[in-house]
Image (cartoon, rainbow, N blue to C red; front, side, top):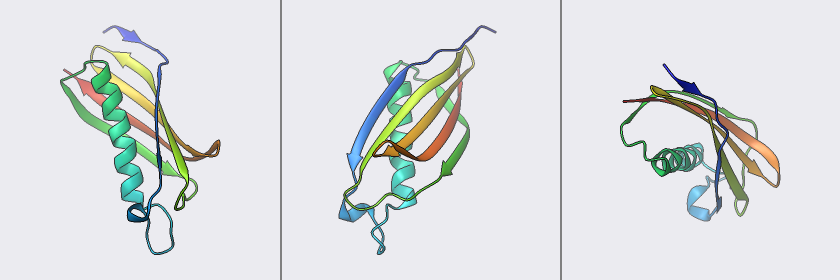
Length: 108
C-alpha cells in the first residue's frame, strides 16, 4: 500500500444569519456540522475521488459562534493513500479556533 502524507489547504467562509442561530443567538451545532461536512466533501470532490465511503469522524467544539460572526472553515488533507483519505478541519472566528474535526474516508 502506497501512503502519501500531503498538506493541501482548502477554505470556505460564511456569516452566521438569523436562520442559523437558536434563541440565544448562538450558531446551531447542526448548521456548523453541515457546513464543515460540505467543505470536506467539496475538497474530496475537487480531487476527483468519486468513490469514497465514510469511515470515522472526530468533532470537537471549543467555543460558540454567534449571529453575524464570520466563520472560516479550513480543511487540510493530512493523509492520502490508495485506500484512505484523512482530512483535518479547523473552524475559526476572528483567528480564534472554535472547532476542530478529523474526517476519514475509505477510497475504492
